[in-house]
Structure formats: C-alpha cells, structure tokens
Image (tube, rainbow, N blue to C red; front, side, top):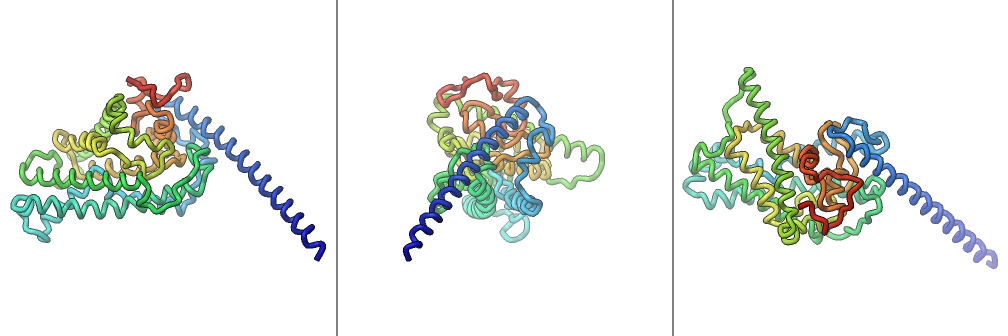
Amino acid sequence: SGTMPQATDLERRNTSKQEEGDEDLRKVQLEKQLKLIELNRFHGYNATLKKPGQGEVTQLDYMTNSSKHLLGWLALASFFATPQGIWCFLLGLWVCSGLSPPDAPLTHPFSTLVISTLVTSFFSISTFVPFAWYFDEIYRHNQLKRCQPKATWNQNKPLLSRSEVRLALSSLFLAAILSSTIVLLHFHFPGLITVTFDPISFSVKDLSFLVASTVGFFLWIDFWAYVSHRFLHIPFLYKNFHKWHHHYKQPTAFVALALHPIDMLIVQGGVFLAFFFLPLHPFSLVSNLLYVHYHNVVDHSGVYFESWIPWQPTSLFHDDHHLLFHVNYGQTLTIWDRVGGTFYSSKKKYTEKTFSW
C-alpha cells in the first residue's frame, strides 16, 4: 500500500508531460497554420483571377469526398433559403396549380401575402439552419481550419440563444415578405416584372438570351453588393445599422444573414430591382441565387475554403473584411474593390475607426 502514492505521482507526472507535449504540438501546428494563412493571403491578393491550386489547396483541402457530396446536397436544398426569395415563383406555381383560386392574389391579396410569407419562411428557415449548422460544426471542431485560427469557440449554448442565429431567422422572414410582395405586384400589374416564363428552345436567339440574362444578373448582383456594402460603411450608416453585422469579428455561417433590417432591405432591395428592368429567365434566377447564397454562407463560415471557380476568391477575402472592417467590400469579383481603391493592401493599417470614405 506504501507504493501506491508513488505510482500515482508517477502517473500524474507522465500525464502532465503528455499534456505539455500536446500543448507544444498544438502551438507548433497553430503557428504553421498562421503562416499558411498569410501565404494564401499573399497569393490571393496578388492575382485578379485566382488560379485553382494557387494557394496551398493540398494542405487546406480538409473535406473528404463524402462530405463534399453532402455539402453539395445541402447547398442544393439551401437554394430554397436564398434571401432573394425564389419561393415567390413557387407561390406563382401554387396559385396556378388549382390548389387555390387562380385569382386569389387579386381577390384576397392580404391573405395571399400572409400565407405565402409563412410558407416561404418555414421552408427558408428549415433549409438554411441545417446548411449553416453544417459549417458551424466544421468551424467548431477544427481550429486549424479557421481563417482566424486563434479565434475561440464560445457558442456552446442553445441555437436560438445565439444573437446571430436570431438575426438570420428574422432576415429570412423579412426576405419572405419582400418575395411575396413581388408576387402580388406581378399579379396586380402584369408586365411590371421582367421575368419571362416562356419556354426556351435551343435556337441561337434563345440560348443567347439565356446566357446574356444569366451573366447580366450575375454582374448586377455583384456590382450592387459592392456599391450597397460600401454605402453601408458610411460612418452614420455603419454605426447605426451595419455595425450589427460587424459585431461578429470572427464570423461563422449564421452571420451570413445576421443583418439589421434596414441593412437587409438595402442589400436585398437592390437585387430585387433587377426584376423590374433586366429581362430574366427563371434559369438565370435559379443559378445566380443559388451561387450567391452558397458562397455567402461559405465566405462567412470562418473556415478556409478555396473554390475551383477562377474568379471566386477564397473565403479569406471576406473573412478579412470582418477582421479589418473597411476593406474588401466585394462579394465575388474583386475588380470592384481594385477599381474603388478598397482592395486589401499590406501597406495600409486598418481599424474600425479608419473609414474608407
């Protein structure tokens, strides 16, 4: 019995040494990751069009094939949660399907608005939450995969108790109202909405329209994203509205939609403007809204990702916007920031009080 305390002390010393060794290893890995992030920042900020594999993709490709497939399906499902509200077109199909009187939007506009808003909100929230949660789990369990590896996870609490989650859900509800309003306008003022539902053939004319419509809508969304975002960084607007979003200096997936209602109306309202002046095909809407929504969540995930698409910057581009505040306003194309003089420069010092205006 006299030897037991000695054995216990030995075990404790060995355990302590093991823990110290693990901590030293973790620090080495963290420093290595920080250097790797800086290397990718250097590569990413020295090319207008990122070449696939230009960064350390082989070292930062953390997702297995199976998880990539899962992510793809989640992205497809999350399309129904796009803030721009593609569900407004499903409402149109619902109205025309005989499930409701064909003239319901005309005879019962308020009821149609309420029902469509509730339906849209339900499906938006039920698809967005698991999609964002998926990235949350990657961020939570993999510190060395983060754009900011030194950031800590302090969100071990019920989902709805997190402020960014509540804000995201309210943004989806607001988007549902906007979407339903667009539908009502379409029924009450035929021809006001420039979206065409005519069948498309494989003629040169139709295919040219499809391509032009898709590219045009993409450029408009991206241009408006830069203009409206930079507009929201005017000192007054930033301090009173947009700062809600920048409260999250180390963003996670739910932060993608964690916006002040005024912020949401400005950003999404501009996207809706295209429905009134730009001839659009439903495919143009589907492809662009899915693309934007997917990358918006990825870019806010806090996890380092590289896209195989040459013009899509790494997730580090927007993560740096949250880290440094008044820089990198663009969403997809970096050309707007380059022309506007707001592209990241290692020679500049960035703080929350150093505005770009």
